[in-house]
Image (cartoon, rainbow, N blue to C red; front, side):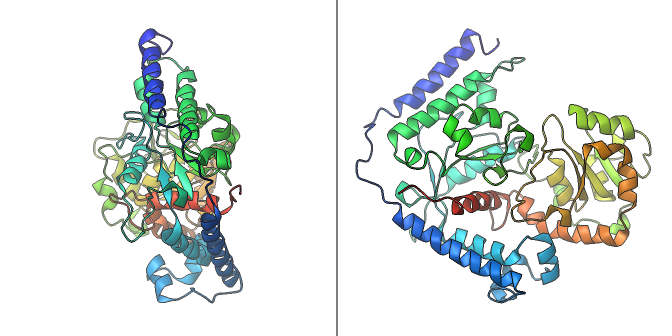
Length: 441
């Protein structure tokens, strides 16, 4: 039955009632005035340290550059020229990340119950949505005060809204309906509850709060509450600038497709070198959206020997990841929406990703120079795609692959999370946006 039917409506009513009941406790909340001075002083100290590091880098080194801590952070194989090519400002990123580890605190609202709050899918195309919620929920503040999670909201620099848009779609919708009103209603009611029970949303008009969604409908969910859409930080896989994504305010989240919840073994094995990659480029996938349709119409079946492009019809002798490991370039066209899990898969296979999309704000682009480890191709250039790739000399391909190897760990999902992995890079993106925010006093 469609969401307009009785079962879907009653489910939404129950969900909203569960959320609302959790707010009946003393709506007046904490009556004492909450000072933001300590939080702002911490942020000011971090801002000053990052600015100093950025200036030192622009002047040609100094400070942390070349230190033992610096080398451990980036890895001993990363030389300064490579770092400067791949990172916008490696000194500033190092200092910002260290300051985040030292200071950043996130408060997770406890209101609400599963399945649409406090949990999400940890397999398949929406893996990162459930994994991020799960890992943040599992964290506990240490006795020494370390760690990103805090149970004291007065110490928090950011507040996480732990709803899962994917779970809402799973439990509220009935195909083939495209009605998103129930989804927006759930989000709006949840924000209303936390704003009524706690003073923090109203203090900043939601500007120090963030949500995360990898579902295509994530952006629409945020429209359910005007301040969430306008002021809050929206961490989205569907990071389409033509649909309201704001690169300086919102966070682009890498899309990753883990069929069983773990990284495929083929992508964890040592990747072949350039001499063992006879294929110029590779793609296999469905005809989802106009970009893929154009790609398949121009290149499907044209040259299986060196430029294989398949529509789900891989030969029996091959498999998806083996093709990636034999290709120099991996084609990553957008589907129905701009993001593609192939970007992460390509980087893990050390295959240079070719991003074919219009309006896609790439993940972690405020830190990373994507042009140092990927190739961007406009949708209108698909007919000239092969010519474009053939003109890239082998030395340049190897230079791009060196960049790919350097950023692999940023696009690796680890359990538990590790330094500089995907989970922590998402947190760092939120941290950076918090540094640009001054709370109302």
